[in-house]
Image (cartoon, rainbow, N blue to C red; front, side, top):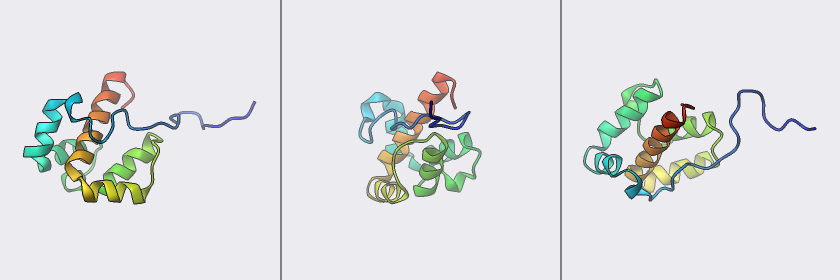
Length: 104
């Protein structure tokens, strides 16, 4: 039997919601739309990062790498460049779901 993952590593997966699943959590969506900086600070706080790091490509890439989520740095850059509020909301929803599942 071949070992495909190191012990303690997460299985390769996708984000648990799509980029435009705003209606999955309207509170997160509204926060991302009207107080994007606040949303970034909560994301950074949950990931033990500086509040200034909560938005953009780097935090998304770190999160994807940690949880073995499909994607690339180029994709992270394009998603955060073209639709930063949607990218931040997607990340927040994923963090919330992982907290609920006890794997964050």
